[in-house]
Image (cartoon, rainbow, N blue to C red; front, side):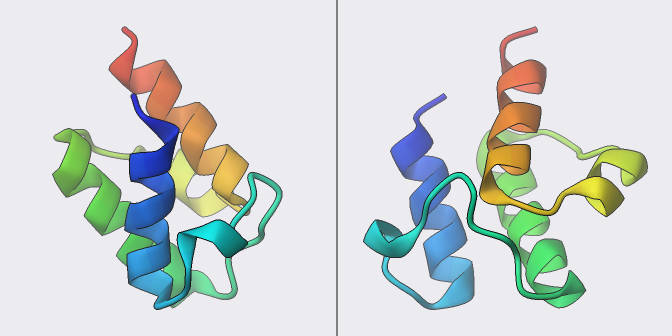
Length: 72
């Protein structure tokens, strides 16, 4: 998994520069999270578990989940 790709997907969804994102960056609201999760699921051909999605608060949370799922 390439973290820069994940950051770019998130930046595209938030309509901001990927350079402004850090792992500790929080998602603004649940709509942002939903859009980001949908884009990441499509990009990595994965499905986020509901519990994981509900608890996802930062970019680092998203990266950790993708690492766990993709590296299985």
